[in-house]
Image (cartoon, protein in one colour):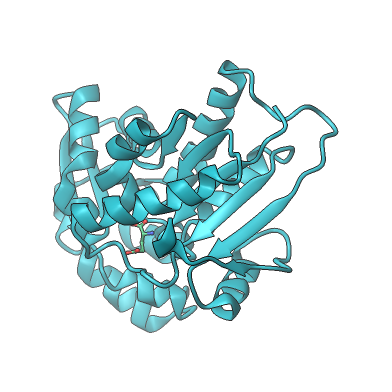
Length: 267
Ligand code: DGL
C-alpha cells in the first residue's frame, strides 16, 4: 500500500525509533511529528498526555497514514488505549515489543526497567511482563536526568557516567540479566549504561523491537509499500525547527532538509 507510516513522539527522541524503521523498512515513507513545544511528556499526567496524543493523531490522519507508531514510551504507556479507539488504522506502541523481548531474553527472570517518571509510575512494563510470565521480578527506576543529558549531547561524558552510576546503583543489587531502555533517548546512552551494568545484562532497545513488530504487522496486513515506490520522509514539529534538525542530523542516516511547524493545538 502506497501510503506513509505516521510516527510521533514528545520531541526529538522518537527519531531513534524512526531510525530503526528506516533501517528495517527502507521502502516505507514516514511522516514524523515531534511535539517540541510541549516536551517533556515524561513528567505529565495521563490526561494531558492523552489530550496531546489525540491532537497529534488527528494531525497524522490528515496525512493519510496507513499505520501509526507511538514512538514515545510515555505516550505508549499512558495513551495507547485511547489512540487505538480513536483511529481505524493499526497502532503500534514501543512498550509491548520491548516487554516481549525482555521476557524472551531473561534467564533468571529478573528484569530491570528504566524510563521516565510517568512511564515508571504507570506500571505498564510490569503489567505486560507479568502477563507473559508471572514469575518475573521487575525492578524499575525513573531516570529523569537522562533526557536532558542526551539532548545536551553528553553521550560519553563524566557527568553522564556519574548520573548513570547513581540511578543504577540500587538495581545492581537485584542481579537483573535484562534491562529495558524504556525511553526514546536511552538507547543513545547504551554505551555508558552497558558499561555500568556489565556485559552479562542484555540491553533491550524497544526502538529496534518496535521496527521489527511494525514490519511483521505490515506484512500480515498486506500493506507493505509496493517495491520501487518512491520513499519520502516528512518532518513536522510544534516548535524549534533548528534544534530539531541538528538533533535529527546526529541520529538519522539521512540529512533532514525541511521541517514544518504545525499549530498542533488546533487539531
Ligand atoms: N519521549 C519520551 C519517552 O520516551 C521522553 C521525553 C519526554 O519526557 O517527553 O518517554
